[in-house]
Image 1 (cartoon, rainbow, N blue to C red):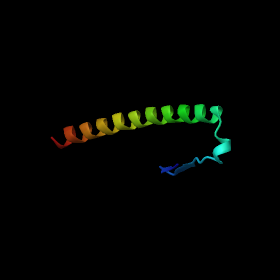
Image 2: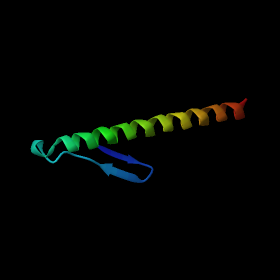
Image 3: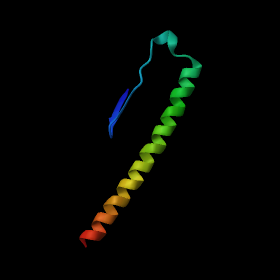
Image 4: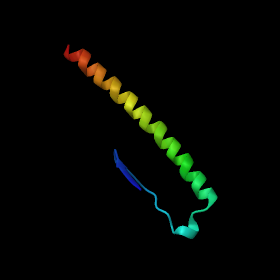
Length: 58
């Protein structure tokens, strides 16, 4: 998985089947939850920006 946004680049990949432990899975689950929170906040801010643009245009 990779992410390239706003000048930041993050890449995460498994090192092999034997390297995927319970701890790795927990870390990935935690990371995924944080990504979801980030997405929700981005969508909220984007909606506010659209509302503000519509109010300015009206």
